[in-house]
Image 1: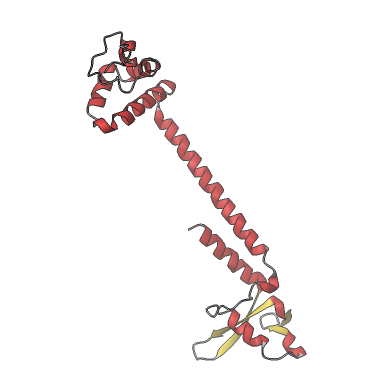
Image 2 (image 1 turned 30 degrees about the vertical axis):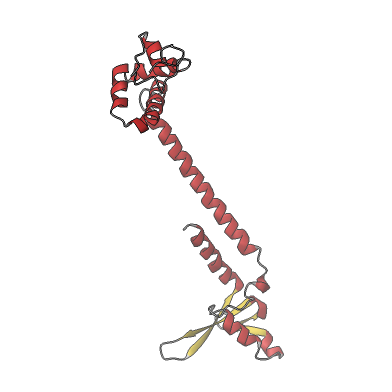
Length: 201
């Protein structure tokens, strides 16, 4: 349909023909700027092919179809080989780069969370489900003598400060328990790994 002022639509203006009342291009190519947009469509697809494309699209979707056709025509003129596919590849590369940057930021945040926690307060709190906290709490309540102020590392037979080790029990097959010791540095590595795994989910 021609515009209200009686001037033809942009497509018919470019084609230098009379704009009919049922012109398929009229709703999507204005008389002012439509001619420039339609020039690329006519050069790449042809006016008749573009009209057929729009007629095969439902009325409600023709506006988006006209925009897509115009975008594809402009991209094809700028890049005759790849057209809009080159734009898609560039956007995919940007998405991949942003995803990698996001993973790095999450890893840095996790590392800062681990390193910013004081070593003496990592295991404070009431968490009945944590196997590391219960033995440590029970050991705290045993005795305040000098012999209980240090833990013996059975692997290296060296003394560890009480606040630098965490007591664990490992039940063997026969039912007897063997004592093991894990420093906060080792637990910190496990905690760092857990943060990294959680950040990648």
